[in-house]
Image 1 (cartoon, rainbow, N blue to C red):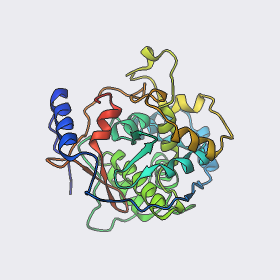
Image 2: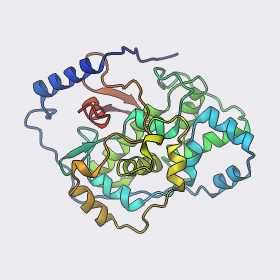
Image 3: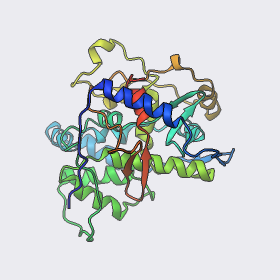
Image 4: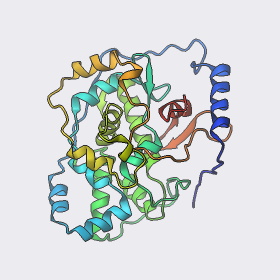
Length: 314
């Protein structure tokens, strides 16, 4: 069974008019008189799987094997070498708004987007409109080739690390569908949003989204890339690889990050990440203002008005 998103390409002016009209008519409130009742104290656990074995396997592979892997699965292998700043992620959870599925830093709203995550992972060989949907029948485990096993391990231990040291059955189901060309990014984003919302509402819990991608995403909007005209929209610029090679501040406390986010101003950030390429944006679902994203263990809403702002369509 296949599910696809019907794409209707509209001109930028039409999209901007829709955005302004929606904002005027509906404003910012989801429900009139709604008051969020969220805990003030947040203790999110960002503990990660031990990935030393995966790093060792990747380092032993020849360049041709790595090339085959990247051609099939994009740049997900770089995720195993990204050091997660646990203090940064813990601070970010404090500013997550479960109602709008976005971060609110001071007066600025930001959210990871499908287009940004796709660009970070350089996933170009998928059918963009073909989304993941669980099969109604159980799927049996099949013997995987070396490349497929490695990719499966990354998806299970890094991208969807629900239980440390284990691969969830749902990840196997998802991985089987990847071979049919489905776009994995909406599902990755959905589980990130779901985990952020759970930690924020409860005030504690372990973050089980892809912390590596979230880490890179937020720093990318502070990332002033040298020789930007050369890198911007370049098809040969690999943002995750560049991130790994770049020196980043270490031992920054959670309180420092909280202070940064509390005092964030519009001029402090880059709304459009310098490595993002022009693309068609998913900004609404039929006549609905919110776009539904299906994860492995549930669904979430996706805010198109915020997406447009981050693509300089303010």
